[in-house]
Length: 96
Image (cartoon, rainbow, N blue to C red):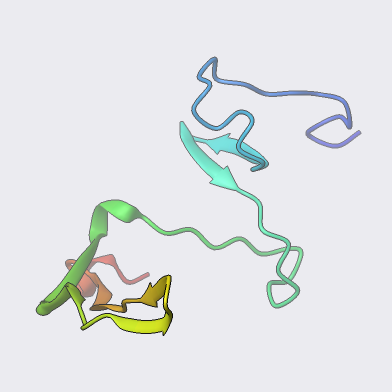
């Protein structure tokens, strides 16, 4: 018998994830979401500690609108520019 039975359901009582279409389990109180990615072997798991990831963005490209372009007399398109990246915080001390 495996760790989880086919019909067993584990919930934490919160409704924040329920009904959103995500399958998840909790690992030491942290939700772990399953992704059906063929590039990840079945015996492996990868996790991100979001406490040590920062989002940096370019101030000149933070949802900066470009001029509107007319497509037809009753419609137009306007592009928004954004540029940024995810950066690790405290990288030397967090690498395994």
